[in-house]
Amino acid sequence: MSTTVKEVQIGDVGAKAALHSDEGKMTLNVGPSHPTTHGVLRLMMELDGDLITRCEPVLGYLHRGDEKIAENMTYNQFVPYTDRLDYLAPLANNVAYAITVEKLAGIELPERCEAIRVLVCEMARISSHLLGMGVFGMDAGAWTPFMYTFTEREKLYSLFEELTGARFTTSYTRIGGVARDLPDGWLPKVEKFVDELPKAIEEVEKLLTRNRIFLDRTEGIGTISKEDAIAFGITGPNLRASGVDLDLRKDKPYSGYEKYDFDVPIGTRGDCYDRYLVRIEEVRQSILIIKQVIASMPKGLWYAEDAKKIFAPPKDKIMTSMEELIQNFMIVTEGPQVPPGEVYFEAENPKGALGFYLVSKGGGVPYRLKIRAPSFCNLSILEKLVPGHMLSDITVILGSLDFVMGECDR
Image (cartoon, rainbow, N blue to C red):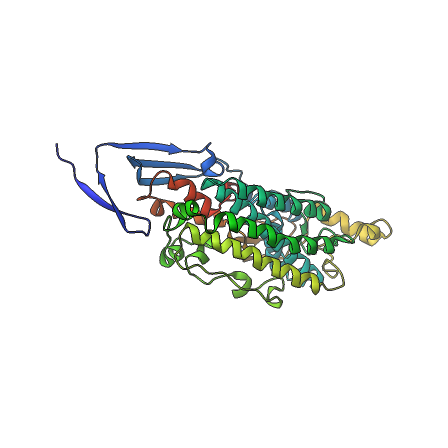
């Protein structure tokens, strides 16, 4: 019995492999409980030997119904749920959600509040990329870089704890401001951290960037063309690694990002190696932004004082003024009073563009909320990207995409 033979291009290298249709193929499930899939992602794959001929990503194992939950709680009560989207960068999730509600409510924030938000967002970006790069190294077989990146990330978590009271799920942002002002002596500690971080990044680069094994595992593997990246809705470092110059902090600035000078790293080939290089450089650019924020940190309030039906008054006023006590009671029980309407806003999060589409019928509870999760969109290309690669390339491709399943399944 004869078999037909097809040719499949492997990555961007141009190598060819013969695939036997109908005979000798094996179906393999990778995940949902597998370290390779970085959570509860299931890949249904068809193999011809070690060569992947088909890959179907299956999501939904972590579905929690965040968008429906939002319809049954006040705007501030939903802030902790945003922590659990990209749980490697909860501070950035908080900010993106709060800005969405504030746009609908027409709230103008003081400069200090916006500067604090930029500061915590860039710290969250560094935290997310540190873990992403360390785990990516492990996916390619290198353990030591992870120890360097995780050590630095622990220092960040100590700073987060001092600022927000929590290390992991911070819930720091409020509609109309942030939960509290910066603690005394906190900014010098942040400055000390960003001054020392480049040394650790250099160590990681020494271990990976010119490592022959790492190069062989990542160069020409998982190549995403500029056209495919745009067509599949990919955003963030994965999009920029494919040569698309798009960063919402530059192109649609929010929270005062236009005040700060930084570069947007762009890749040329769009392979796993480029995605690693883009994230390395993004950490350096975040350090630059943080230093500028600290140097120019404005004085003043950390919340919109005139948003009386939105932001709860400070505790000392609640305890001493009947008007503020009633105001706080109404905000806690009924929620911030947001006018009817609909709005969409997306922020440049570490994983890509995190968007919130919000519909309000007035009052303190959203009528509808839709979350545009960057990890979900970034994974959409797997069905096209993976076929033609070897089974051993799967770990590297997934690691380079740097996704979070809590954000995918919402």
